[in-house]
Image 1 (cartoon, protein in one colour):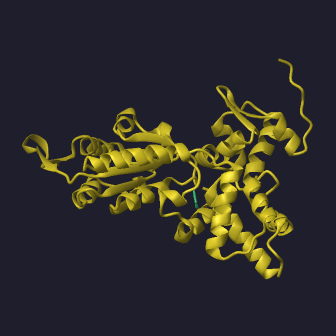
Image 2 (image 1 turned 120 degrees about the horizontal axis):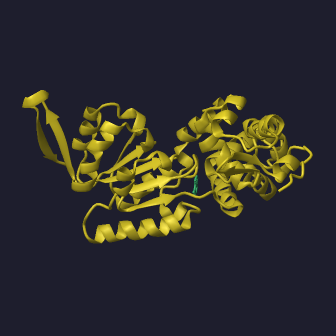
Image 3 (image 1 turned 90 degrees about the horizontal axis):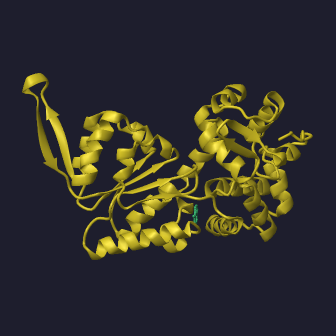
Length: 332
Ligand code: ADE
């Protein structure tokens, strides 16, 4: 992941104060919230832990926040881990056997779990048992341990990398987080500004909302950087300050960063606007395939600047115009 995005993520990770702790404070993703409320309420009425839940979608949209909310709203405790942190079957066995009945187990980046470990997870999710093989060769035998009942809440930015058997075990539901609307983002920024005690006027909030990739994590990051700029330059936090602070960060009017623009520029200048395959585009821009696919592309697509076709990625007319290139009218 490129340093700029990583920095944003780390910073936001540290900032728990902005994270809503009740469904009522969580803005947006309305359909998901409604579904979760019903799922949790019904499970509670049956006096049973909720079934397993999977969240997917681009980074920064609130997958982890929702997992924490599920735990808070149901008064259960949350144990958090991630796909890459579970290296051996023994790691998973230890996590599962140490759960208390009713705990929420949150596994972030579940697409990075290795195959052998995944296979241990299947019976744990489906039947609440752990199959452990003891010994090797002809004398090897399997023992089965009963696990405390638990709810797995998993998150991924790459649903396509999850195997069909794993996906099918999220019997509580698989929910795709959507980009937020500008109005929802404006509400989130207003809420964050109030919590941080930042005096931002409406024009500043609207301007940040326009440029933050429809993503709360980025919105909160921009808010804090604009607050810093206003403080150091002894200015009010208004629209003009947002212009200046975000220009300094290399963010343009559509919210594109230097690396977003670079992908489009390379696509236009080196590949005539495409179509070009992901691997080729990644090599030409010195980005990881995954960064382009998970972080950069979803927003460019949402903005109508890039299209994904079976033959590869294409820069749209809007991308040419935004970056000041002449659009070659192509023959059909
Ligand atoms: N902070 C980050 N995401 C949020 C959301 N969806 N609602 C309220 N505050 C947030």
